[in-house]
Picture 1 (tube, helix red, strand yellow):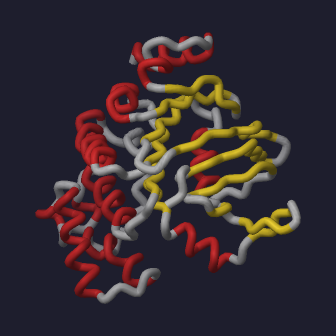
Picture 2 (tube, one colour; picture 1 turned 120 degrees about the horizontal axis):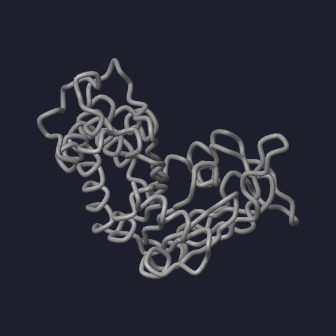
Length: 256
């Protein structure tokens, strides 16, 4: 395992004329939890998608576990990897989105075992056994055979987390995973993420849940308008921010 699990160096990304990421550099060590905070449109979700090469960057470099994401470098030039190689690398990074994206025609266990069987070619019996364990781990042992429509939003999101974990990822990316949930369902999803952090899973979490960031993050990064404004330990960034933009943002979020 590399000394840094994720390293971004001068990452730029634009959509048409709009520059969304303006030279982002950051590092996440193995076993660390990084929480990305910032107003809507600050580039947090785009950065997360670049780590998984769901979005292509225009300048800079991103490495996951020592390997360049999406490209190979030859003589200082970058060449995009073939889709099959990108998919292979992506399989090692779990991603959970704001929308659960579960297959509606499949039960919870079928959703969880689909990728291990298809992508990793795991035997079905083995995939089912570990899928049941994962659903138990996220508190859904009794919902194995339920279809998504019969589950609450919080339960669907926990199935989505179990599905990502079924690929045995070295890194988990969470993109605003509680923002579509009713307030009473948020805690059950955050509790699963707390457990993952305790078990040493490397995580990058885009969130507005300040309490979660304070409790679980090793580092907090505040982004605004495509740049890192402030970064450091939760005690520094959340409780003693230096930058006016950080203070203003936290003031607004903590009022709600």
